[in-house]
Length: 582
Image 1 (cartoon, rainbow, N blue to C red):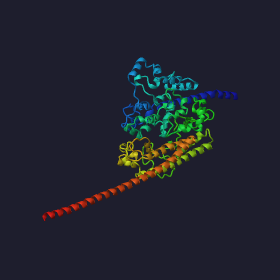
Image 2 (image 1 turned 45 degrees about the vertical axis):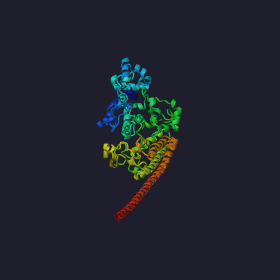
Image 3 (image 1 turned 180 degrees about the vertical axis):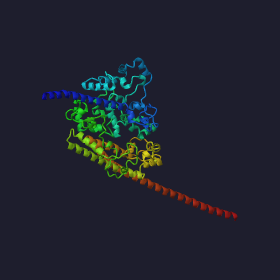
Image 4 (image 1 turned 120 degrees about the vertical axis):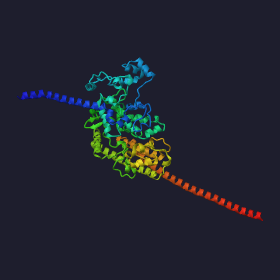
């Protein structure tokens, strides 16, 4: 009887497991269908009302811009590639027509072997061209076939660009989302975290007033760097065309072409750190085909990568969302916990315009959870005690940086209050779009104080520090900004960023010589420049006062001489008249 029971159990177990596995698989397919529905409605979900659609997703070609200032500027032609859903223009012209005469619509590869052979080679080496090149991708391809309801022998040009050559389009995330819904919806979830994120790249590019102001002043092509770096709401920012390699997207270089330089020196700080050097020396031997969730630290990767740290969601889960653990938000928003002496204590000054409408509390329950997630990530390679101490030191260091920024802000506040800038604010060009900001946004978004300042001065206001004070680095107006304002902008947005990123990524020289030391030097320069400006204003006032006395003396002397001459003339005339009568 015992053997019969055991046999029954052994027989039933596989059947029960098969039923359970089938249930899980069915649930997974259902979830994927829901994700696919969401992914293929990418822009409708991210921009849910007609105003936002009109600002960012409705295609207008090159007739007008994007965002609230869309009628102030027209985009440069390259923007059709950076922001295709908004600005793409279908190709036309004699050359294109000649190609269509020589090649059939099904001859994509043959035509492009002549026109863009590099594209063809990348595609030929891609998983799109060989969707069953190994067991892992064969299983993934089978899953996608069930999802879209057809067999996939290869993913060709027409699958991404369309079949009608008169209606070709650039693929967007919702195009990719038909087959890759999980990755696309994970990417979409960045928007839930708020800016900065990749999803809002276009919005963050065109909403700041200095962007359209550059167009008004005749410098549209100069914004190439802004446009290309902010074209981040697309899959090919990490998975380069037309290879779209997952392995390529897992390597640090996929992030470094944007995350480098003045305000976010991630490439420099990670690349020059001990972690970065280990990667440079050994990374060629690592298995980049293996998904991040299967990576064993110290075995598969001897040191972490950007993706391994930033895409970790906790509990062994990795996702196409590197912003969920962000606490300091690029270090540009004043945090609570600093005893501010400057106008930073009033931030955000009543402004209700995202992303400026909040103060940062790094010890909120949500941010404490994110900090713990970072400790868990670092503890995969380091001891938990070291990871926690490092995290705490980073937070303490950032508070020190903000204390110094408060000191610098005090210097600029004092100069502004006493009108000691050289050149005075009233003699400058306006703040970017300063002539239209008040009426366009109103007190509800700008706050009463900022609204009234713009309204009463015609837009000639000093805006210093986070975040609108950033305009100093992008403005070509006459005498706006002045030298001391640029010194401050470079300090808080560039030097402090180097200090922050160097500390976060373990690169001591970036943190110190290119960061903290530069901040300290800038503070000293600001104080020296402020003394010179104050002295200059006093000298100007003294000269003006002395000039007035000198002029008054000259006028008095002239009037005295005139009076003497008039009296003398009168006496002479009287004597002459008396002599004539005799």
